[in-house]
Image (cartoon, rainbow, N blue to C red; front, top):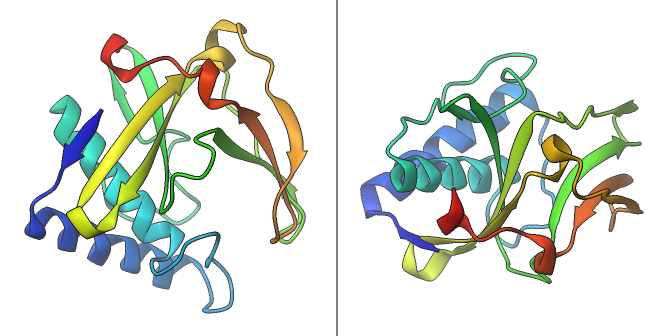
Amino acid sequence: MRVQLTQQEWDSAIAMGSKWHSESKDTAYGRGHTRTLRPSEVGAIGEAAFAKLTGVAADLGYKRGGDAGYDFKFDGIEYNVKVSEVEGDGALRVIAVDNERGYTYRINPLTTYVRGHLVAAERAVVFSGYAEGWRTKRYFPELVPGVGGGCAHSVVPRQKLVPLERL
């Protein structure tokens, strides 16, 4: 499912993502696997696109220590939007162990994780699906080493993602 952002929506999301980055990370950290944007900027664009898709306002404010563990909550369901700058293999990856920063993330079993990627040249986000497996225990994502950055990820392959149209 493709969501087109206006230039203003795109620029506002990048500005907010830049603010998140500058308030939370030093300049050496937070580059991630992106080509031109910081992960926080990509994340803000993803949240802006999901907000536009669902009609639910995005909370793009910065909170020291992070948000409540999810990006959106509506109809009693928590959503975490995971967007990358490139499509790659389309798998959903959620950081589970961050060796660089020395802690383990708790993957929330009540959260539905949404996967998407940018088409930056067109100011668009393509959502490939979601995994509600942590909530329903239908999927048991495997823990795999990350590429660079010393992180390990829980992974749901693209073919196991549920189409967003079913939300």
